[in-house]
Figure: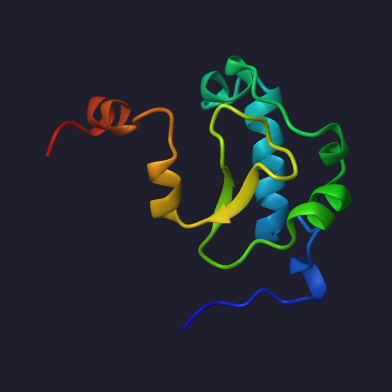
Length: 113
């Protein structure tokens, strides 16, 4: 059964508990924070986001609420987070659009299986 996010209470869009808010916050962190573990793949490569998206309300108005089992994806992986270049994608869609392979880091941490 798919979990549905409440439209009232602490899980409203804009609440730190809402998945759309978490996606927005993570996007900004990857682009802005050199201490983010993925910064090298985003901000470190010059990937930025639309200046209007500094505001969660503007981000939400442009991309809409995050559907269940989807995450924020850039259509052109060398392009910025901006209207027309983002979508809510499934995990398999994201993997096909990735510019780096996480397997070496995972294998280094956990070993090959």
